[in-house]
Image 1: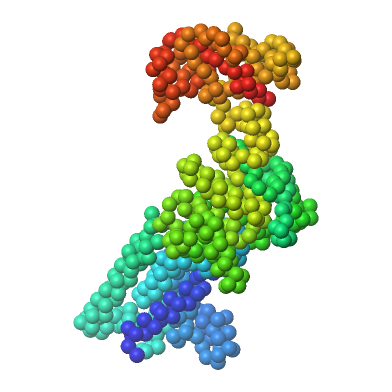
Image 2: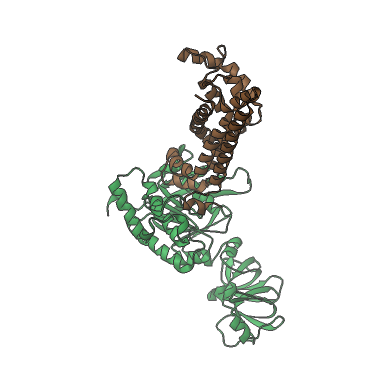
Length: 226
Length: 369
């Protein structure tokens, strides 16, 4: 398997997982009245400011055969976690967490509270209100979360290097591959891959901004956008 | 009539202390029988907080809320039914229609768990009753203000609530449109017979809807009864201002003429005396008088042969045109505000500093306590 398709597979897995676990976290952050909320917010945002090597280092310790996560994994599945694709997915989920949670939280918070009150008064429980009102009205946020966590995972380097190493077909992602090729002076091939990543990053950002500007949004959404 | 239509009265006593505004306490007891009850008062009086407490969106500090036999909140018994299960319909001032759903989907929203057949019947019935069947596939952003209001009412009522709360839902609509919507609401409620609490700060709406009025000011019920009783004899000064009394004057009781049902008042420190309806007062008491600017007549010569008992001589202080109405300020020792038409201004050649006579009917002078 070449490094590019490995990167896409990784980014796809991470994007999907983050959407699933990002939603409840974002919902809680958006609607909880707990005063200590800032603590969780800070934890979620930590990967934004931490050097990837720091994050990767602790992820590696946790996933190693003597780390808590690694030990648990060995007991459950009989194999280690470090330097595997699964390990890479886990570390990337942590690393890209804020890129999924923050757009979701912002768009959940932007839903008019009166609509939520109206929904409750019409007999809808929390789940129905979420499914029928909050989620459809937060669609741009959902797309942004998915696309950003996908793109961010696609471009990561430090965490992958720390946790995954550089095993061809298993953990060698495209950003590592580029680094390798530069080291071995294959500038032409490095340039080809780098250009591809650049194009993908640009396309992805165009998508995010267009969605948030409601360029292709259904008519009703454009009318409600300010 | 089957049992479902048994009319139930809302009985509530609510005390709500705001956490941060220490001065404001909502403390009201009220009853609303089936039909429209108007909750009237100036903004900031606590009307919306009261509705939020009834609906269960805001937790009262203490109190009890019941509709008929059904207790929804009782602080002593630790009962607090969540809004989802109170079966109270609430139309907000902002209406809060779901922007991504069509008119029909908005209306269906509250009928989640009833059988398809029944649901269709109820949606069709209410679409017809509120004359919005032709809008069923439109989104809220595509319909007019009045249509939105009809949709919001239909969405609330289709769930067969036990109580309807309306928080100034018809503000911004012209009188004719408002009357048409209220008429449809009344027609719907003939069969259902639920209590409707209608919040407004507009006197016009009270006159138009008027059955029962509960006047609220500064978190307290200040009076209740028929609109005429509550608004034409306002008990408190702020309420008088809200109700459109432009003239609020203080005076001293000079003498009572009980057989005639009137008393004489001297206004302020001036020599100006007027006759007002008799009230429980004794000579020397200080009283407040409220007079609507529209109830004052202006004359350019001393009028003769009038039934009105109060004719005051004064001088024009200012004249200001607002739309099709002129606001005249007249100094008679105390300053009066009178409303006249531009035609009257021309006919009487009214101008600043001109000598004029004010004419007040005794019963246009309302006592405020």
